[in-house]
Image (tube, rainbow, N blue to C red; front, side, top):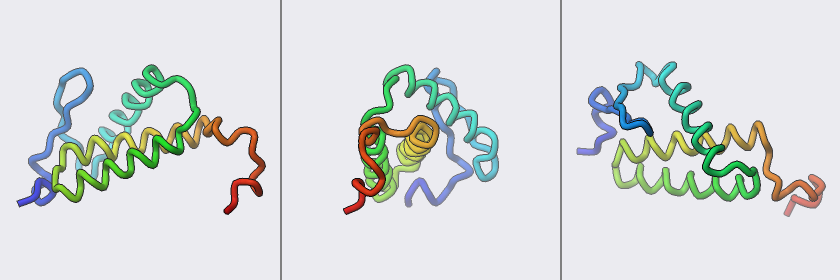
Length: 106
């Protein structure tokens, strides 16, 4: 049986090693966890170059973990997807800074 079948038993390991149970529907814990992940990511990768590539990579890793039925790893990847998406929303991606929107179309 996949870990996805029993979400009530799920716990998430935070970067500091503590373990938290997500609130019903993830709720506020998800936002606290996302904020922590964004701070960590900005410290480790301060620039905004190649964020679209990073987002694509994280989505692929999320898909792989979901297909394998590994809930904890999938939730961690989902958090990273959200983190990179928020960074693109707030910071953009400097890889595309010199391109006009019409130049980015196929």
